[in-house]
Length: 92
Image 1: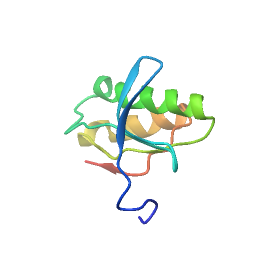
Image 2: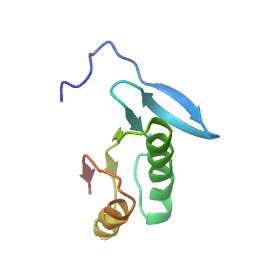
Image 3: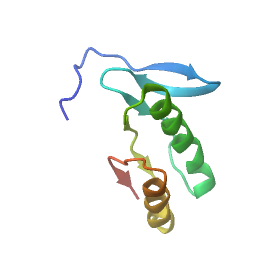
Image 4: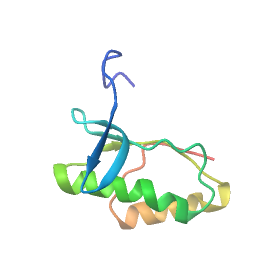
């Protein structure tokens, strides 16, 4: 997307006791390394991390792409809308 330089490295960070796998402060990006999410319970973890970063930095992070089962896509989108979390991309 051309948002960051190829030389930038994502780093793990701990914010309020929550480990974030891939983090970049400028631009604010939150990434969660998950090969596949099969249920909403598994999706709570990255959503919680996005909320923590959003609260701490007072701005909307660009966040991870998620790969999910097709039957949870609509529920995930609705949950993110209710929590004011923007999903950049979602794969099924």
